[in-house]
Length: 83
Image (cartoon, rainbow, N blue to C red; front, side, top):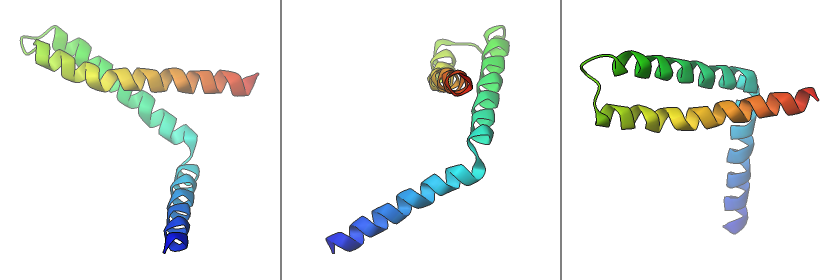
């Protein structure tokens, strides 16, 4: 039972890694950066409208902050691999 669970877990991990490799890190990075640009644009546009309130600000920041950290990680990875 334990060995079949370990094999299943190993198979799922390998499948997830191969799916990311198949899609490609560049495509995933591009999608993350595009989402960041869209959310920053929406935040900037809505901040000038009458719809802007504290809840909307917190909601957008909740989505933007992880994407900023992801962008910084992508930039650091690209700088490190170029050196």
